[in-house]
Length: 141
Image: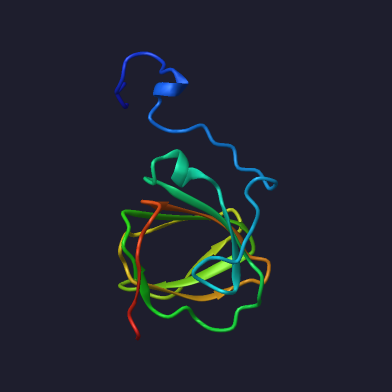
């Protein structure tokens, strides 16, 4: 069981993070992201957490055309929750493919090379990254 790290409830102004509510009206989808087959909606976690945690709502806008190629992300944690459809990966050091379907939660090991090898046309997911800002490094294999 975890122990309490600070005394009593905090006042909102002293909480160390911001109160944030991301709605479809104030956090619309856009195409400014790493992959042209997707659109992204920032959930506001980066600003609320001082950039310690990032979260995006991502959905496919084009059918699967080609694998992403082997790459890795310079981050401490990478999590995916699939809302609709499915997403298929290969991970360096893992046998076979990993398929995450609607309702699945995937914890991608930090810094491990992977390749997205397929997804459904109706794919929609939440991605959480630690930290919010990170580099993606292509491996060219």
